[in-house]
Image (cartoon, rainbow, N blue to C red; front, top):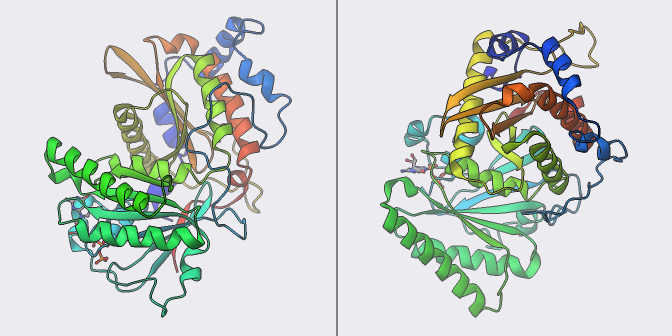
Length: 405
Ligand SMILES: Nc1nc2c(ncn2[C@@H]2O[C@H](COP(=O)(O)OP(=O)(O)OP(=O)(O)O)[C@@H](O)[C@H]2O)c(=O)[nH]1
């Protein structure tokens, strides 16, 4: 296993924990005296009656939620993401940067893909990423179209925004129209890619132009509301992770539950923004429903890097739960930290490892969250317990891995 994917360790927990403002014993004592009856434990209250994977009541309608995996006949919860687009548009680079942590500058040396490259991701949920070579026509009778498109969760179409894109749009439209007949529910996600090299004006003009051309073509063919979304992406900044997060979120049936839990946590603990991150890929699988700005995502995602670096230096593999030779180590279950940082005054970041795949990172809203730390710790503990019900497999199975087929 790549050490960068290792869960936070006891040692890193210690090193990070040293930045806490007061220790756990003080915190819980202080916390119990601060809890007002019936006030702060809203989350706890409704969780007590929560059956597995039920959706707690929330006034906020869910976003990005499809409620099922489109076209997944097997209904096995293992959606497939297809990366398609013209040659050299950046498909392999995207997959290498997001899932293999390849530094973006090293993608210059990636060779052209000549056959379908299939990778399985085993993380908070299992999914596959297929990188399809750009030069092939998959609707040619020589290809088994059903085998490629039957089980997919999303088709990600990558367009090189720095290159001539009319041909790419034509192929994209042809693909969408072909798929609409047999698989109308497929989510088509268009990544207008390599926007890093463009000026702001040119970038937004290009983006608008691409959207317009795709939508015009689809409506000319009678598809007014085809499920097509557009993102501006680059491997040289956070935009590719942000876009992938939104693509993956559509495939998580538990998303409304996660959002409702995060909303409650935020309102109970006065958290400005909370993200639930997949540690391996830095994709966030859910956030509360308050408006997201890329700045807060960047801060939180950079913090994951810091934590991974620390755990890489000091980390060790923790015993597997329910394993054979394991010694139960008390106090070695979660890593948590509260650090300060200067950003519009005194803001705090709160990180807690939820399980071996997921970490909760919160941007605290006021400048003295340390005083409320006991309440926050307690409520995050409740959130963690609720998550065990929502994602039970994350507690049982092995470490996150990426395997090539
Ligand atoms: N400026 C910039 N270049 C990028 C970006 N993403 C990929 N590239 C470059 O685009 C080139 C082609 O990338 P690949 O990932 O090989 O493209 P591909 O779509 O997999 O190509 P095929 O395998 O031929 O289908 C490489 O030189 C990458 O470094 C990006 O976001 N910005």
